[in-house]
Image 1: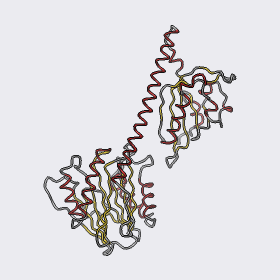
Image 2: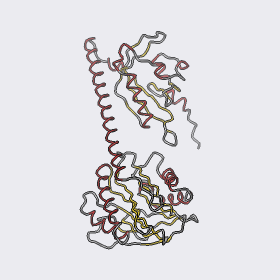
Image 3: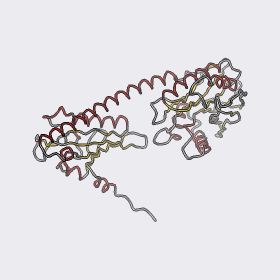
Image 4: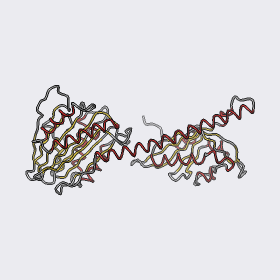
Length: 407
């Protein structure tokens, strides 16, 4: 039995409270009947006009900051793509048919973005509940009413100031976090003419830092050691552990006989680092002269090798438990495969392939299919396409690091 079609226009008009549909430039695109009734306006005199031309600020109470606060909230929504709930606002409204004559009003606004398929703000839904009567309700003596109005309004403005301070503080912390992550995960330089594309995508709930890492080390004889790893957890603590392990593995790769020994050294070091337990990592040694890949994995998802004929090989023949998982030292396994010119090597962390409630083999198959389709693209374009096709539409739900190397 088919479902009846939804009349979205009727739903919009029936929404409780006042609702405005705005463009990203804050031009009114539509208004529901409830807001027309509250403000005494006519739809044809609102649609197509700039919001603050329709609702100018009362010059007699400009210090209330209603227009300034609303504009700042709308701009935040457009800039971040996130919902913004405002504190109680005093925003007076011109009396219908009496320009310049304002009626005292109090509102509780919420501004919500509508995003397109690429995450850009397409529309802003401005929804308000008028609370003027609530502010005045239950107060019999005029002096008491004035006192309560003043008290509520003062507390609302204090809340607005605290929210503004928290937003500014969060922005400063994010700048520090971004600088820290950039310092620990610098963009790779070309190694002996070979270029690699790297991507780092924190989970949408993270502070732009995480425990995922990548590392590329130039070695003698036209060789490169490339690794990715994943520390358990998110945030600055995980990022600090990540920085220590990344540096240790980078150093070990330059003196070890191969990836297995480098991971053995890293596992011993990880036992002395708080928070490094259960870290996963994989390292591959690329020898361009011999056309071989030597690799070893400590509990990490397998690298993917896309051959020029379109087949994709998962490098899973040398997998061992995560770092520090064994109580005693055991030599780690190592495997080697050959490659031909034009092949592509992809290393990644589990955020690229894993989904809640889904078998990991489904994610690996999704990766193999995307890699086969786009294998002829250059490394930078291929990295972008893999992220676009494999990460959830709403953004990464787990931290993700990605390295793409054309062999």
